[in-house]
Length: 458
Ligand code: HPA
Image 1 (cartoon, rainbow, N blue to C red):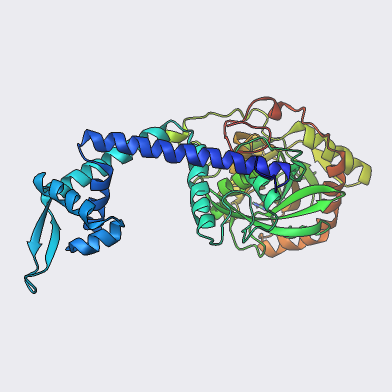
Image 2: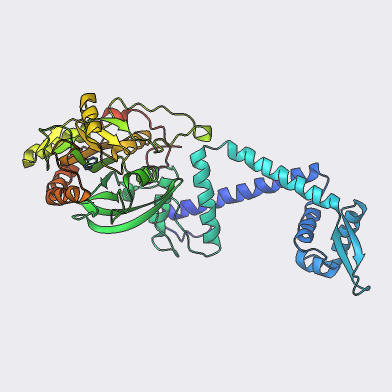
């Protein structure tokens, strides 16, 4: 028996990988053969035709070299293909002693038909896979291909760029998790359960320790996060508008952001948002743990499910913001003496302009309490991905028309800056108090979005 030179987990992974690779290679070969026999052609003939297609006008000698076969075997092959009107031998017009090989139109037709049949077979196999699995598979194949060529491997979901062996075991375990497998072994490095989405004025994961940056490549685009620890708990931080507030609310890639968090194993999200107040009693510096939204956005993709392969999903948002997260944040806020209100209706506008005074009057009549530009579709996508989500909305101004003065983004930033300390205290104090398990209604139902992650089987 071969000596075990790897720790147990690695050995199992290697054996499993070996088995799947061998099985896939065999199946591809068998189906390839079956297809060729349907077209009454042998594998060496097919190989020879492909070579001749790629390198027109080869001599017999050159064909022998490219196929790495003896000249008698190749002569035999070419004879048979000539009889089948697939190739012909022609004399080189410049040197009549040299014989060159030319494909006849029937060969081209045959090759097209075989390649088409192969693709149809593959399409049929891929069709039987879940769409998310398909994407994960393609990226994994790309990466495997690159790794086998000894190239730099770009992580597809939730991983770092990996060169060489590095932290191989941790990377593989993480990849297994992002590909939808339950982690082999303890999976301790996957306990990354909470994310903070920093809105306007909150661009840095200050207070977190050992912060590292990761770019997650999702089917919707890239999302860059910073991951650090707070009191021994791993926390993912995502700056919604980019670190230098370079992305306006209507251009944020909400889907990539939420998908990335889900792929990283996040289960709870606390988002921050600067808002204008529609209610006199919610003054600047107050925090509102919103519990409902009114959606006045216009041009945003607000779902992962756009029909077709993705399917049609109508997710329940009766209670869009997680009551468990809100309750913890509220309790902490009261203890710390921070002005925090549990409940409020967030009116989400398209932006990037502020509202008119008439719009704010209308929102007030509709029951709106605060107005901002980012909570939708973020909260909806979080629900589709099965994440608990809460927004700590910080009032930075009275909404348009309420104070009599025009609104500026600078004013919003200034008020945010002078209250960000409270915001940070509120969130960070809440983190260690969150129960290990989610017992809220938002976590009760299985998530429609199937992002490979711990505890969720594809
Ligand atoms: N309107 C919309 N978004 C905002 C506001 C506002 O008044 N203040 C901070 N973000």
